[in-house]
Image (tube, rainbow, N blue to C red; front, side, top):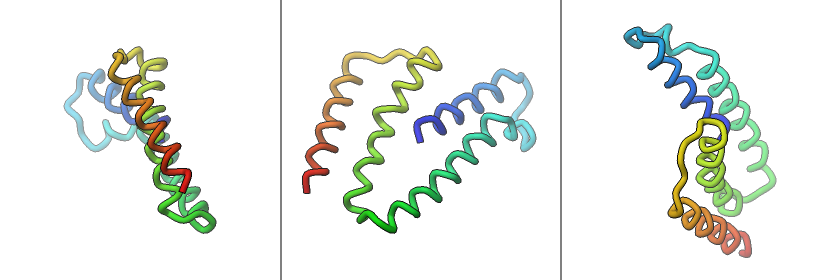
Length: 102
């Protein structure tokens, strides 16, 4: 999911940098298509996993996207992360640990 979000950001940036008014064809760039394909594949994987894992146990791990997406944005897109991000990251990870103990 985090990689898909980075691809969507790259898609948006490439549209913005093209200098053209966005139209339907402008949105069809390699980043957007790659992100959509990745999300499609992840959806199939998610449905397959839910055959074996209860949704109530699997869904908290979706919150890891809130951990990894900003980290990828920091390292790949040079976006800034402040101290509050790391406090929030610790709370999310702690919450996932607590929820996984059921």
